[in-house]
Image 1 (tube, rainbow, N blue to C red):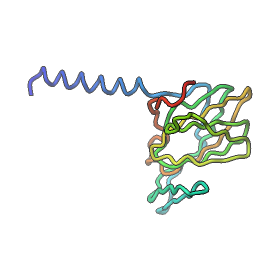
Image 2 (image 1 turned 60 degrees about the horizontal axis):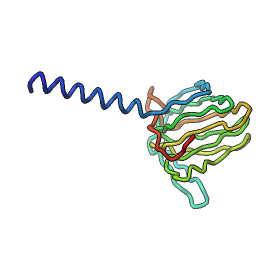
Image 3 (image 1 turned 135 degrees about the vertical axis):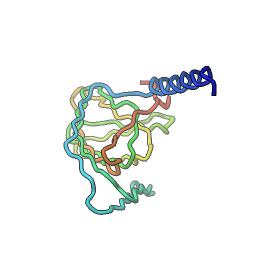
Image 4 (image 1 turned 120 degrees about the vertical axis):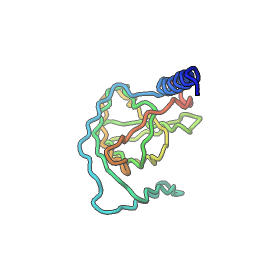
Length: 163
């Protein structure tokens, strides 16, 4: 392959990487603190059934587990993102509204202090917002995280909500 073709391929690859990064969204108005991270000592097969007509979330060989405390300022939001495995979220202060990247109506579902919910992870794109005038605090347990790897991946705005 000639040098010109190699230079062209390198430039195309860089453009693709940079354009993907430009489309990703990140959070604002929040502080997340990892409280603990551990690997399962024995093989673990996790199955969660969620909803009245249960959706089954399966992590057959769960790896690391991470616990994080997140405080959202009034108006704070997580940015569109996903997780490698399921995440269990407990609202410990305030309320949090969750938006699903597949919901064309952008309805959102609000969870108040004392409520918990499960995000299926495994590439499910979503965004969480504090739409109140007070801080919101959540504790999240991320399951099936790659050993030593990220428990969150920024995602492109799916275009379902106009915030």
